Image (tube, rainbow, N blue to C red):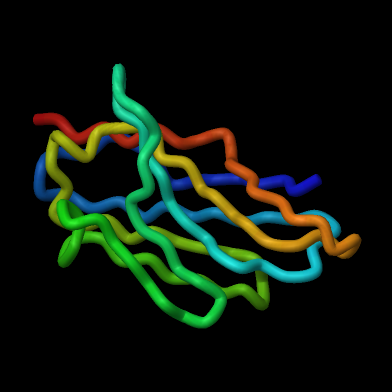
Length: 120
């Protein structure tokens, strides 16, 4: 089992910044991809940004140039720096980690989520 903990959510005004952090633990052999998802009220959960173990990074179009995903796989952390936040960024943000257990079975786990609210 993988235990994932997110932190850093909160409330900001439009144009403000927040930094989300995520760390994980468990009987993990390797991590293949780390990602941040978000789910706004009444909408499905969608990926926002992802970073692969080989360093390839991807963002959805609405956050390009505003959000930055970074990771330190050596200490099992991934962050999401969010700048110039907009009201439409309001959502619960979830950390997602996918990889292999030491038993070589795959896992695909989410954290409990952290609320981000952007409002004036």
